[in-house]
Length: 146
Image 1 (cartoon, rainbow, N blue to C red):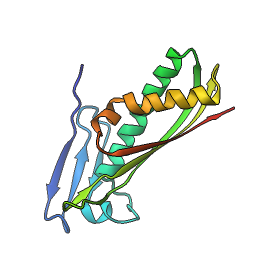
Image 2 (tube, rainbow, N blue to C red):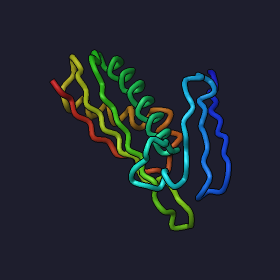
Image 3 (cartoon, one colour):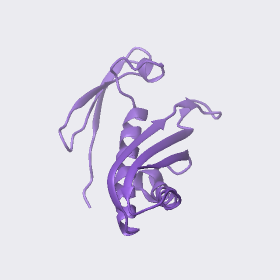
Image 4 (cartoon, rainbow, N blue to C red):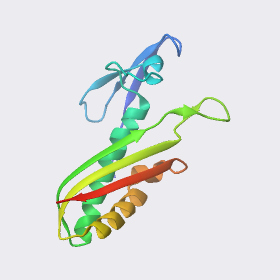
């Protein structure tokens, strides 16, 4: 299986410095990062490790859910997935990611709401990014829409 690479160039101290995250493998883009924007309510156009984890988790979950729905005999028409990754203080010092909230709204043929919830819970438990984030509380809000 392939490996993917990202690279960060950082200049300066934590509080006054800044950096650029480059998605090296895909070459898709480079994003600005800074700790003050990371810790602020308004990101002001600057990304953070938490936002990048949210992107990774929402896309991984969507792929896994799509696969598991098909295995269950259902046909996914559309899945809207968001992940909210929180940054919080670590009682041991510094910061940590205490929780991730996954929200999915699905338009799926051939499945009822209870089975959709069951399959979504399985996707949460088995998506590779969820597995990598073991130790972080991951919650799920799954709704089947008609």
